[in-house]
Image 1 (tube, rainbow, N blue to C red):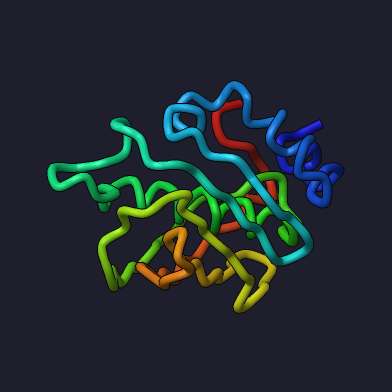
Image 2 (tube, rainbow, N blue to C red):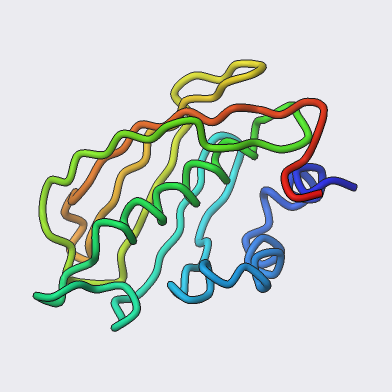
Length: 148
């Protein structure tokens, strides 16, 4: 089975999805955990730690981008018809500093196509304040997988 096939079999099972990510070093470095996953929708959370903050003790913009990439990519995988997917682009608007955790990232499909899927990703702090919003496109691979 391909990675995407594995994911499609568990996309509605948060525990199985978190188990699938046990060996992803960056995912675990950030202490990310999926909290909800369904067709076209993914939510994940992670706490503040010295691994993810910059000077001033706020979430580093690169960590926001990384969490958005995970969120959008897995949201895409809940609907993609191919063997795998890759990030084509993400645009982020940073709206407010993120200092109060756990941080929550929510992805929702905006447009589902055969070769490209557009996802909106919203980032919230623990007070449910919208701190960043992203719009990304993922390219669906139909004839190969990444890293195989």
